[in-house]
Length: 241
Image (cartoon, rainbow, N blue to C red):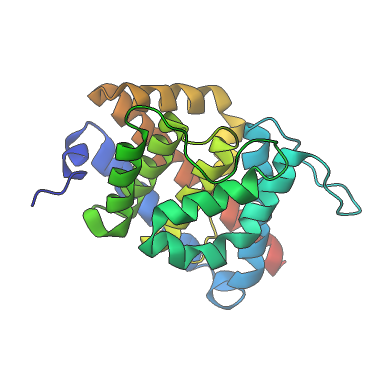
């Protein structure tokens, strides 16, 4: 059977962007601090990713000094970040269950029904297709799978709340599951926060389904992975000083 994502590699600039992103993330894993002390740097990356993801959904970027988080968006993003390790096995075998769990965590304080995708034409079918990709329906490189998962969930917005936090968490799970970033060291969310207008424009391009727009999103996301690798390197450098 033809790989459903293989045609995306024919889009202008995509193969080069995918390879560059893979190389950047790989090199971060070879940093001497990350060879043994990766648990510490991964924990810092997780917090930075959660803060950036929350800010993209309208939450604050700072965690209070006493550690008490009252903002519902930031609290949800932090709960999601803490849960990714335990949700990963579910993501690999039953991604729709994992998405429901992510939404329960992300949206717990936002006052809407939790864990149940909205009923609308095409939503269930598109989620099923996404699940089939995550569970072995494609063999393309990790950056491309992550870009499609992220872009599709953002375009589909399957839940009444917290879709951004959920989509970005799903992208982190996919980065781990595909072997792109097995230790979850990268922080591409920071790039998205710093370039919010470009992020939104690229997501809109993906949502159109037009080749040019899809390529725009994939190359943007690969650039975010590169920037996330630089952020990861700064974390590792700080840990070694």
